[in-house]
Each structure stands twice: as structure tokens, then as C-alpha cells.
Length: 575
Image 1 (cartoon, rainbow, N blue to C red):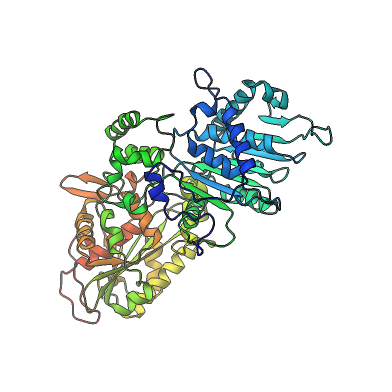
Image 2: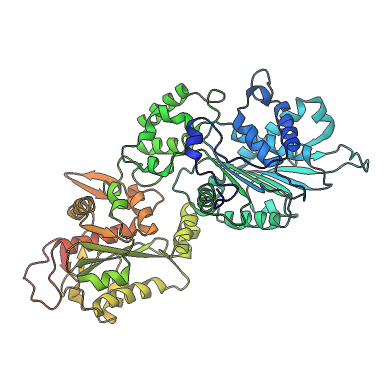
């Protein structure tokens, strides 16, 4: 254990399976820990019939969080557990727990005039949380004397006199919705964030949370608590960053300067990704439901499970993300492209563009893109000169206008740009210039067929064609690839080659996202993949791949060899 940080919990899955809280043993002040738990147990739950106390209805996992949050202050006054990241499914008293932690923080505070904040992702959630806090105060005679509740400002003030000075501490806790104003007026001494995955969809989320954390680091007694469910879409932005960091801390991969305690109620990644989806069995659900038997039952979830399935696989995937913390990703959607099931297995981590060009005897190129608010996708497909295996590398470009108009995926696009798999253009022609440079590189390497080497959707590509010709790429090398049902052969062929291992790719996050977004639609006897049924997600680089794969399926000869007449039959035509 000496090689692990204090917050690492390598046996977390075993703990979850036996009903224990997935945290390691912590060095806590026993007095502070138990005082915090006593305060927690006395709080009344205002929205349950009979208004029981938390001591009567709460499960022990919530007390473990309270102990960690308030019992970790050392002799030097510093808080060892400076942050808690709790991933827990819906209906496990998340918002109530956030309200409790806010009130305990005020009661255990000894510093005058500090400010705390409880942040909901929307005004509705913030109002619900404030209602819980004010209801708890109203139900307790002692709390009514100690706190002043300002309904208009959604603010709670500690008006009880300090025993030493006789003056009120005047500590405040404000409950608010998530916006840039959260950090106005100084950095809070404690902050509780509810549903980070929803906040992450806002374009300012990373900046605001960075400001909160940046200010708190300078305060050794500060406390940041994040309580959230999984995302209804593939994790993005600050939620993705925080979740991945929490997992690395939990698994012992981060060992230095750790302030965060991860408490993650989720299935192991391998179990979530299993094609048989064993997590659908209700027998496994108790492991990720810490409040089972209190606010939620297996019987109720089974009923909701069936209703979600009846509404379609998309609704079921959303339900599973919220109630079982199943991370949305590859292979979760019925109607999704079948090739997604084999995509991860076809990864070759040693492959990049340089390696592809070195190994290939011939290459085809696919290009797909829409307007200025869309992605421009490029795919370069090589045929290995020795093994004949197909090698795929992709890239994409997007303009800032797309991030403004498509705010739901803006943070995801920024994530992909940070991973060097997507370029956010700063100049009007940057996307075309860089795409043309890459295609010209393949041409100069002598790898493009004399005919049908560059496949494009015939709609709206005049500027690309002109640019390629100016770069010295002959017009006969370019070919229009008809979209829609005529791509059925390329789509089915790709599925087969991914399955049998004769097509491999670089494992780029960009393509994992696009493949996960792809959905199929029957069209007569064919199956098509279209952007029209892919929701907010983008698939342009995948469509570019199908264009390149179509041309490669025509078995182009090595460049500089005589080609057969009529090789490029309909639906491919020379520009």
C-alpha cells in the first residue's frame, strides 16, 4: 500500500459487492467525525411523511461521506480530504445529502463571515435543495434559533453568537443555480455541486469550476463536494475530466498532491463494456445502489427498466445512465451501427499516419463535411503491402461558429481538440488548407491510385476539388461517391472487416465518439447511416471513412500500374 495514495481504493469493486462504502480506511479525528454524524442524524427530512430524522432513514454510506468531509482536519488545521467526488445513481438522496452537508458545514464552522455555496445545475434543482435546507431548519427548534433564512436571496445566515466574542459568526450559505456569478464576491469556503454532468454542458463550466478550485487550494480548510450521477450522453467537458481523475485516484494511478476522495458507485469498465451487457441483471444492481431499501427498491427499478425498454433502446440507455451509472458509449444503443460492437477490438495503438504511409502499397482518401457549423471529416485508408490489411487514420476540423451554435456538444469538441484528434479552426480557410496538405502528402508519396483515389460526397465540395487540383492532384484521381443506400456495401463491408480483423484503426477518441453516435436506418433492402438520425452527435469522419472504404473495396492497383477500364463503375464517377 505504500505505493498508493491515501485515497486509493483498489478493492473498490469487492467493497461494493458486499455493500461497503468504496473508500479506503481514513485517518480521521474521531471527535469531529462523530459530532458531524450526530448533527447529520438530527436533521429532519421535511418531504417524507412523518418527517423522520436522517438518523432514522439514512444509510451508513451517507454517514461515511459526512465523516470524511468533516473529520479529516488535522492538528495543523488543514483539511486532508479537501474534495469529495461522489458518483451515485438517481433516487439515492443526492439532493437531500447536499442540503445536509451544507447545514453541517455551517454548524461546524468557527470562522466569522465565511461564505459557502450549494449549486444546482438548474434553478429548479437549486430551489428543491433550498427547500430541503429551509424545511430542515423550520422543523428543528434549535436550528430555527441559530439560522436566519432569506427566502428571496436563497441564503442561510448563522446568527448565533460566537462563545468567545459574543458576536454572530455571520457565516452564510447561498443556494444558487450554476452560472458564472457563482464565483462573484470571492471564493467560497465550502462548495457543494449537485449534478456536475449537467453543468458540464455549459460553455463556461470548466472556467467557473476552475475558479472555485483555484481559490480553495489557498485555503487549507476549504471543502469541495461534488455529488452527481452519470451523464445522459458520453461524458464531456469538466465532468469527463473530473470523473477520469477520480477514477485514477481511486485506482492508485495518481499518488501525489491528492486532495480528492473518490466515492464512485459504478460497475467496472470491463463489465459495462461487455457485449452481453451482464449489468442488465437486477442481481447486480444492489452494488451501485447505496440507498437500496430506503429511497429505492429493486422491484420499483425493475418496473422502470421494463418501461424504458418499451420506449426504445435510446430511452433505455438514458435510464441506465441515470439509475445504474452505466456510462454511455459504444454498443449501448439498439439501432446503432453494428460495426461499433467491434470497433474497440480493431484498435492498433502503434498505428499513426506516418506508420500508415510507410506500410501502405496504395491509399484511398475519403472526405465528408457540411456547412460552416459542421465538421469536415477526412479519412486516409491504406492497404498494407505485406498483410493486405486495411489501415485507417482520420482527422476532422470545426470552426468556432459550430461551438456557438451547437452548445450541447461544444465541450465534447473541445475535449477532442485537446486530445489532438480534432482541430478547432482559427482562420476561415484553415480546415481546407490543412486537409489539402494532408491529401497532397499522400499523393506525393506515390500512394494514390491514378483514378478513384479521393472519394467525396458530390454535394458542396467545389472548394475542396479546386484546392486539390491547385495542389497538383489530377482531377481523374478524384471521384464522387454517391451517398445514401448506395453506400450500403461499404457499410456492411466495414462491419465484416472490423469483425475479422482485416481492418484496423488508430484508436482515435474522435472516431470512438463518431462511431458511438452512428445509428442505422433501413432503406428498402439496404441499411444506411445518416446524420439525420444521429442527434446532436457528429459522424462526418465516419462517413469520410465509408467513402475511402468504398474506393478501396474496388481493389485499386498499386500506383503507376496500368488500370482496367471501367474499374470505377457507378455510383462512382470521375469529376
